Image (cartoon, rainbow, N blue to C red; front, side, top):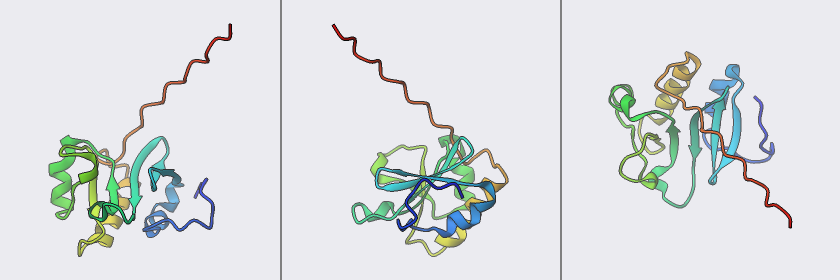
Length: 133
């Protein structure tokens, strides 16, 4: 695994990284969580924080057009409250009875390059340097 994170940092739900190991996932800290990339795609975010515990779990990068199909596979999947009423991202909640099974199944879908999971982030625009007068 290509991991720019300090090895002493405890990443929540790290069994996900074990499952994705053959795809050489990259882990990047993001908003107090951990974004998981496979190639250029951000595929998951791992979140286990004290604030807003309702949203803890494995977040799936997807599009609204895939919600209905994914909901059939992951019946406990839900929207992320922190992101507002409508969000393309979906949560496999840590508190669900099928959490680990669902997270592993999401990893298997990622390894099969399922088009319903993963988004290529929009590149950040470079800031223009202020001209010196």
